[in-house]
Structure formats: C-alpha cells, structure tokens
Image (tube, rainbow, N blue to C red):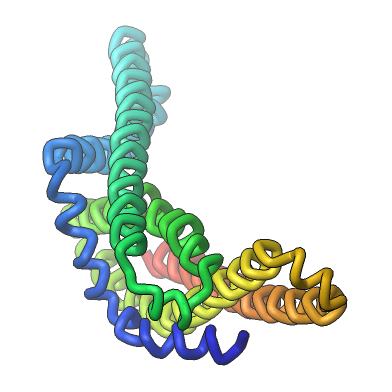
Length: 277
C-alpha cells in the first residue's frame, strides 16, 4: 500500500508548483460572466469594509456636536453602509460558492469521462477506490479553494492595499512602519505554508490509499472471507488509516503553529505602531 501511494505521489510531483492551478482557468473561463459578477461583489465588499470604519468615526465624533440632525445623518449613513456590507457579503458568498460548485461539477465529469476510457492496464497499477477518492475528496478541496480560499485572499489583499493607501494619506510615518512589519509577517506564512502544502498533499494521498484499500477489499469480500483473510485485511486498513491520521496530525500541528506566529506578529505590530504613533 505504501508503494502504491509513493508511486502515485511521484507521478504527481509536478503538482508542487502552484502554477498547476492554472489548469482551472479553462473551467473558470467558461463561466466568465459569473466570475466577473463575483469579482464585482468582492471589490464592493472590500471597498465598503474600508468605508465602514470612517463612518463609525463620524458617528463617534458626532457625539461632540450639539447638531442633532447632523448626528442623525451620521447614524443613517453608518446603518446604510452596514446594510450594503451585509448584502454585498451575501452576494459574494452566493456567486463565489455557485461558481465553485459549477466548476467542480465540470471537473468531476471530465475526470470520470477520462477514467472510463482508460485501459485495463491502468487499473492494474492503481486501485479503483483511489480513483473514486480523487473524484470526490480531491475535488472537494478544489471547491474549498475556489469557493473560499481564493475569494478570502483577494478580499484581504484589496483591504490591505486600500488600507495602506488611506494610511499614507492619514500618516505617512505610520504607513512606513506598517510596511516594515509586513515582511516579518509574510515570511513565516510563506515558509510554513510550503510545509503545510506538502503535509496536506501527503494527507490526501493516504486518504486515497485508505479509500482504495477499503474499496478493493469490500468488492472482493467473498474471496477475503473464503480464504480467512479478515485479520490481515483489518490490519492493513488500520495501518493505512493510522498513517493518514499521522499526516493529518502533523498538518494540524503546523497550521496551529502558523496561526500562533501570525496572530502574535500581527498584534505585536499593531501595538508597536500605535505605541510609536
């Protein structure tokens, strides 16, 4: 089982390059209108997220004035912006998630169409259960990337860029300090992110191996029972499952460490900038 997983990993060694995600572009481009609408919703929510703190500041500053009508206008504007943010966020979630589901459905059909035409020699090298795992589990990860990770990353980049622009207009000195802190936060993310990607791929490989082992064993369960091979089959499946758990445990530990480091650096940077400013 380990040999099968290792050989499959070697065949997929090229996937270490993030540019392999470019293979998704034809599937995304087929729904470019939906992708464009999702992009507009993303930009709108990012812009509103930058405007909302300004509106809140106006409301807080309005308490110092005796003009009740002006204060009412500030409250009305803040509520309107908050409602726009809520609607924009819901619209972004709907469009991005729908796009992800549509693309993943097309990928699943394309993979199945490809697999159904493969030669019998191919299925001598790889277990049917692993193929099924790739069609289901791996495409679910693609859905997570399209429907969540990419949109969140783009939104954060837009908010960071807009926030830095506003900060430069407000206080160039503090903006310069923030730019000095950003590399200290990004470097650990890049280094640990590479490690996390390797562990995630290893975890997925072991999950596929576990699924393949279970599928092949259960499909031939009559032969397994006839030759009283239940105990070795249980041991084999248990070993693969434990290896999958070990890979998941290492991945979880790495992500937890990355979370601690990033949050600590972010808040240390914020406190430092406020302290100096």
